[in-house]
Length: 321
Image (spheres, helix red, strand yellow):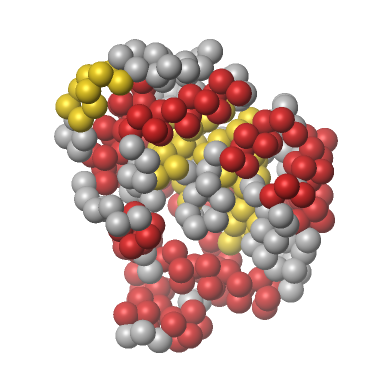
């Protein structure tokens, strides 16, 4: 693993109460980590773990990967981002994206419509609002009348966009400061990253990389297949992997899932797909595989630990650089 560049990890860690994660997060800089990134689905919200990390390890950069554009109103999202950017000046990156129809529609009862336009409008609003500008604007997907932040950060945070296919990738490069990628192989990076760079040089390309630091390949693949089935049956991820050329490999999973046979769906996922999309093996191999993403064009690798029986403090040490 090269000592140059950024090296991130996803927080909070599974299986440990949030209030008890301080010592792990405090250890991260000495282990070579430069960033911590949160997520937001059905666990912790995206901002609270980062607020704690900003105090526990003040040298770390903090990022959301990602906050859904639908589930907070534009002004509320701007306030959340501004507050964390003010608490950690120059160390916060706001990652926004569509999330998925499951999270937006099924769990939050919000229509999942015109996702590209929704993210575009949200980014454009945030660009204005986070500078302290008064915003009165009718966008395609929402309107804001006379909003001005009352708590303006010393500097607006960079904004990254979660992107899978060409339209959102180009949006990330054109309207934002870069992209956040997810569930892809190093070879896939070489396909998608150029779309981001069409927006100009210097764009950040972050990627959440799922890692299982164990030499028990059977266990790692078994857990990874459950995760793959959960994600790849969501329409946005299915479309992405069809675009990446995995239709033939994943069609049996999609057919079994549609028929209601979850067990068959999981079992039908080829080991080769797991090995492409999930890093697993000895710690040295895992670090080399993460480096392959960097070599392919990722500027910010973000490790996401899979629960394979390795305690989080040990896994963090194993994968440090």
